Image (cartoon, rainbow, N blue to C red):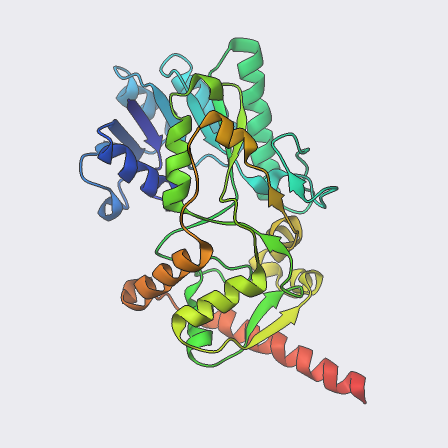
Amino acid sequence: MKALFIGGTGTISTAISRQLLEQGSELYLLNRGTRNSVLPQGVREIHCDINNEADAAAKLQDLSFDVVADFIAFRAEQLERDFRLFKNKTRQFIFISSASAYQKPLSDPHVTEGTPLSNPFWQYSRDKIAGEEFLMGKYREEAFPVTIIRPSHTYDERAVPLGVHGKNGSWQVVKRILDGKPVIIHGDGTSLWTMTHNSDFARAFIGLMGNIHAIGEAVQITSDELVTWNQVYETIAAAAGKPLKSVHISSSFLAQVGKEYDFLGGLIGDKANSVILDNSKLHRLAPGFAAVIRMDQGIRNTVENILTHPELQKEDPEFDAWCDRVIAAREKAIIEARG
């Protein structure tokens, strides 16, 4: 298989790239070359800013592919550019959308690819919806061979998956646990969620690459394991060898006081909802696929990796101070309410 990935160095795409090369595929990565250290050996690089369409067209002029996947397209105009670049150069174009695009609030927590797309709380999700609509229009009108992938919460060995974190990622929450400080869990922590390790995601994704039955389809890729947010945070604390001191705060309150972290989108428009993702379509299109890394196993490995790699420990004093203020305000309100 000859494939081109636009981006190719993120949480999802790095795992796919690694597995594709292990299988002997011919893989090209088109990116600006700013994260070469994470690229697996054997990849063929095309150094280019995809947003410079003329330069990209020139460098792609003599190339064609079995599969092109864009991992860094977030808006419809970027996909319009991709359509111009690849409409005659690939047998399959894969767009990575998002499970956050499904309707919020959900009328039914059981989510399939047929669940309506509507998210008034998160611009990110609305942009993904617009991208899907553009591509499916090109599929219907011009037979552009598109496949849409909807991931949910996918993680790797570089960061633990969380519901509430700052702009610098997950380390500050892990550090709070290590330091014996309380950590914020949105809601009462009992809502259902799905965590998917990137290596599991990659195997499912590869099962859809070059798959004639996936053309014109939208497919969600997640683990089938359901966990609560309390279980997620308890697992992180256990992996860190510390007791969890959790503070539950309503998602609506966090959305009001944490606007700089876009909790309106990330929580109300996504993680605060109980979601049960039905992967029947994925199992039909990619027979034999099963996610094999349990949440507790994956998180334990991630925590161990972060603790042994200081370069992954990016501190966030601003978010740390914000947590302290929010928790203190909650405690003060409780005391005052009790009289």
